Image (cartoon, rainbow, N blue to C red; front, side):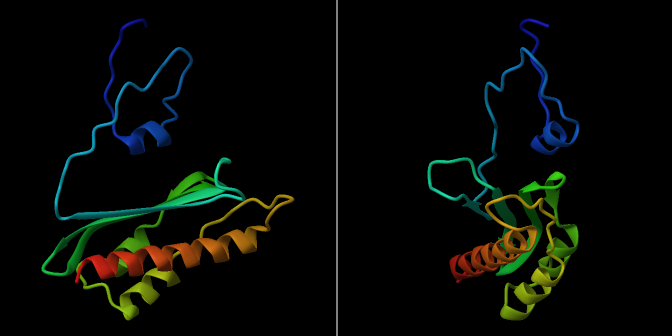
Length: 142
């Protein structure tokens, strides 16, 4: 309908496939929260092309303890995937080498193969990217 305004979460937007013809996203609201740390990485063959996958982490930090973490990757066989077991591995704990290692144990995205990269290679790169993101975030917590 022309002129109809709808609000929804990004997760609902993606999961429920709300994209329809003659719709446009006018704005995205991200609340400003000083306790939240967010990091994103994109994996693309060259800088200006569409990424093969994006990986993002977000969590709140209080007294160097991680809470409300979110770990999401796009470009998987399911379009995107949230890793709740990986999140659970770091929630309520400080980011240490051990917690990062435990988080990575539960992180196993599934990709399609194509002529550029195998699914195994993409999974390996995505784990390296997640490890890098978590270590960068750990440094910000100091």
